[in-house]
Image (cartoon, rainbow, N blue to C red):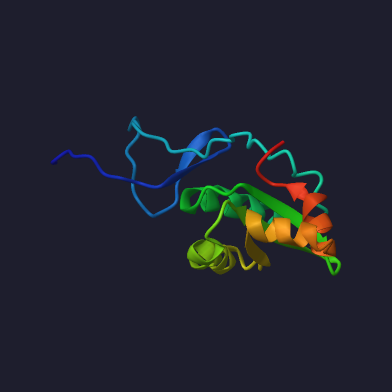
Length: 151
């Protein structure tokens, strides 16, 4: 009989490894590799307990923040409550038009993978200052919003 290595999927149950597929494993056979999910305690962002939404929304928001920082370096990202729902405001140094598409594509990618829609607004510091100068309510909503970047 020719001997060789085979790969068999197994599950650890009641103290023994049980094959998940029909296979004859001779007595005394040794397994050499076991893959197991590792329970890693995830570090939650500082805003996690402040945001009054379900965990699915918070995970989508966390993913958006992680991905957006690889697309652009925002001055600030704020979460505001507008019309009884949350809206993300990405504040850039300048060139809001130049980064609008990649930021929105990032948000759309989150929607495609999670099914969670994230309303996003992209503005420049100049526009924010203009809103402040004209005493617009949106400025104060942003100013008092939840910072998603800084603790």
